Image 1 (cartoon, rainbow, N blue to C red):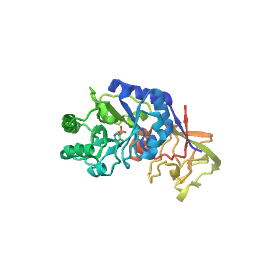
Image 2 (cartoon, rainbow, N blue to C red):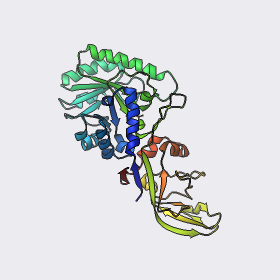
Image 3 (cartoon, helix red, strand yellow):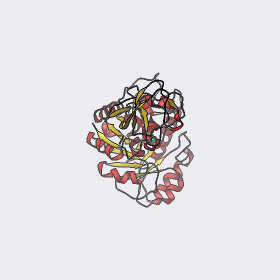
Image 4 (tube, rainbow, N blue to C red):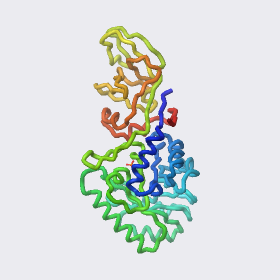
Length: 334
Ligand SMILES: *Cc1c(COP(=O)(O)O)cnc(C)c1O
């Protein structure tokens, strides 16, 4: 079986880098949605807890239930809103308030410019009074930046809008509300930080997706992907390997089959340039559902040790490379 290793030291290194920006570990909420960006939800939650992280963010209630015992708070980004002592729920629309269970802990998401989720700026007062009428417990107010990783002033425009929201919340008399807006790019860009919490995703896994013109915070990739050999054969010159025989042996060569394919979440593209494994071996021919071929006899090969580098080959981003990896791949802490 293909294997994923999780480097605990690198994970803690990244958390420390973020803590330097926020000023405290207590202000970090780790974003563990989508199986912790493919790293393994419960495993990463456990490591984060051991490090001293108190807050987590996940996609739905199913993920939240699996890890709630490890944290002081777990924020669900999108699901039905029910009352729970640890789990809080994002309010994305006014109708979310109407449908919420009385007594639920909620965090109001305000659309300050991304236009995907959250209530509009002009709906803030209405939302706050409906939250009160409905008997919901407002524990947070949040927004999400659309371009924190882009060299432009857009981030500042959204921040300004969020400052207006904060004032509205404060004058309306709600107490003990935490304000949060920073994702990884905004954290890494931040010169000073004055909110109660950050929502750190990709950075904790070791990727800084900011253009290099920003202050470089060097992070360390946490995940490595390995595949195991299932068979070895001699390919004679001009024999072809894999579906459609896309790869033709230019010489006699020893080729092995390894147990990784698009069924495991590895990317299959019709790209004329072969993907180079982290050890510099080109993948020969097409990626099958569960197998690839490499010119190697090693029992185990390192396919990827840096998702950002791998993503360049496939024309995507680190997020997609790791998040797609199957839950069934064994994950081990090293
Ligand atoms: C996914 C997500 C994050 C984390 O974003 P990164 O860029 O991975 O740090 C933060 N906030 C919200 C609302 C998200 O959906």
